Length: 315
Image (cartoon, rainbow, N blue to C red; front, top):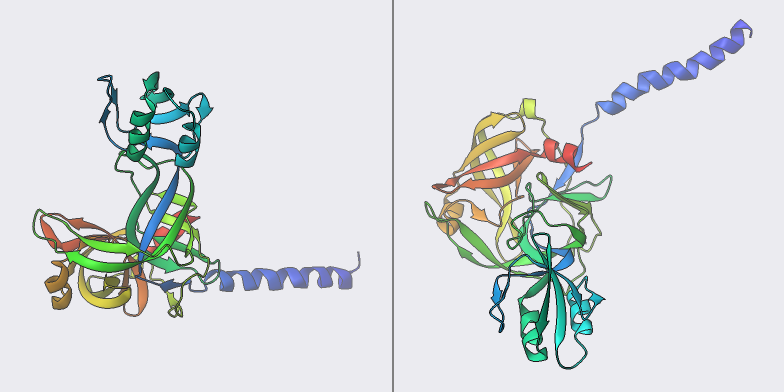
């Protein structure tokens, strides 16, 4: 190989190496949201929602899995209802804590039991961000735990929908408040739920949002977050996202603590509420994190996860 040919090969390699660090340092931008969302997970099995006493004086325990009805495998409530089509006595095979049990139920009792079964988990939270590049979203900042199973459920599919805040139950010391919401399932879903992790739920944004999306802003990394004034975006009335002032009091790696200082929010909610999880936190025009928890005895005091950490854990 002559000298001129070697120069032609090396030059593009030098250009590539010089360009890469510049791209790597480019600031990541996300769209901060704050909308109340309804969350729906379709569970992997049909579960008994809570303890039920049968006519035979046997207990069908909450959390038990309905495996078969009349020897027909059951994976959904629709399956269960279809399997019960025959008249007379019904044979149910259930699994409770790893033990398989067969129960004989009369048709009328079996139809009554159907109302105590569940094949999905529903909830309300707050949408944190949308990534304009990947079209993925993040929400909640913590994991969904099923109230019956007392653990993160295995699910087949999931969806998020817009929700509208109808009423507020204020937080008081020792008694967390909550948002009373209606989930607008009649509208297009906003996205899928692909992951349910300790850092939040994540999925694909499907652009079913009926309004124009806010502008993407630069995320703030942990080393740049400081104590002092900041804001949260959240909805406390209808679908309207509002901005409320807070004071960040502690920053420790990917976690931070804050106090609600906004008098309007304190008057309306008492501080932090159940359903605010995922509300974006903004400082100096940059995206800091998401509300995750409240301090039960001090409802004006909350905890949060940095959005940089949420983004890292979403991949």
